[in-house]
Structures are given as structure tokens and as C-alpha cells.
Image 1 (cartoon, rainbow, N blue to C red):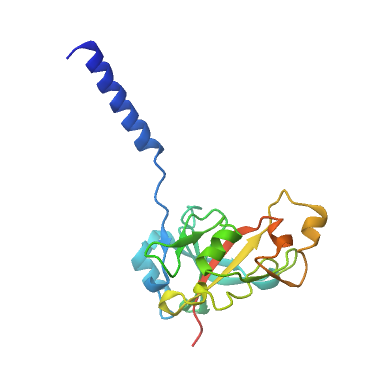
Image 2 (cartoon, rainbow, N blue to C red; image 1 turned 90 degrees about the vertical axis):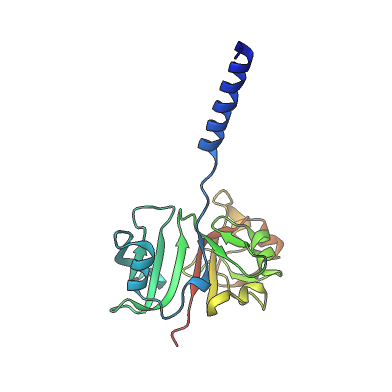
Length: 211
């Protein structure tokens, strides 16, 4: 092998190694069809492994905490928070929440691999829903929560579950622009004042009714 060929081989090998090292890890996907309201903690242990399922306190409404289950508690990118209708027995699945730095994507109706994840903006969520939707103004206990998908695609999740979401405004936005979309009121996702504060998804929950 001559010097040029040898150098070329080294370049190809090193480039391939660099690409392999820089390739992003595939994000895990949460699908309503994989769970049901009959799912219990024992089933989660079978699915995720005993070492990855622990009991803990979850954030509830208005500053309260509730007993729940945490999947992958030591791995922020894979963490899931599980709430139950029967909290003492950890059964009767109420909801699975993706929040903070979790990388989970949530499967949405439509194309075979359509998903949404944390950080998605209004345009992306509207596209998943196929129409505008409503959310609360920011800056209070229920601020930023979606208030209904208005009969859009996200109202028809697989597996009998529902999808709820919370948005946060861009932290760089201050003053009058934020004041216009803050407080106890409902806003349309198409509202120019809302779009001016560049909201993005900060939490996603798939949930099931108690009965």
C-alpha cells in the first residue's frame, strides 16, 4: 500500500469514528398504547427493572406533593414521574409525566412515527394537533397549562389516554410583553401576543380516567 492510500484509509477510519462518536442517541418514545389504567407498579418493575423504579413524592397542585413512582430517578434524560389513582397500592395508572430534562418523546396520532417532546414550540404542537388550541396565561399555579385541544388530533390519543401539556414563556422575555399573557385567563395558541413570548413545552402528561 502506498503512502497516499494508507493516509486515505486513516482519514476514512478516523472520520467514521468521529461520526459514530458524535451521532446523537435515539430518544426514547412513550406510547399510550403500551400502558392502560390497569397498569400498576409491579408492571413498571417488569418493564423497566426493579433498580430503575422507586417510590417518591411528586409535585401536585398548588404546591402540594403526592405519593408516586419515579422511573429512572438517577437519570434525568430518562426520568418519568408516575401518579396513581390508588396511591397506597400504587395501582390504577393516573398519569405519566415527562418534565425537566427528560428526553422522552410522546407518540401522537397521525403518521407512524409522529411525536412531540419538551422544548416544542406552538407551531410544532399546533401541527401535531392540526389546529390551534387554548392555554392558560402564565405566572400562577395553573399558568401555561393547555386548556383543551378543541377537537384536534391530540384529543384522540391511542390507548384511551388523554394528553395534557404545560408551556413556559421564553425566559428572556420580560415586561409588558409577558404581562399581556399572564394571569388567570385563556389564550388561543394563534394569539400574536402569546406567540411574542415564544412559549415552549415544559411538561407533558399522558393520563387515564379513574373509571
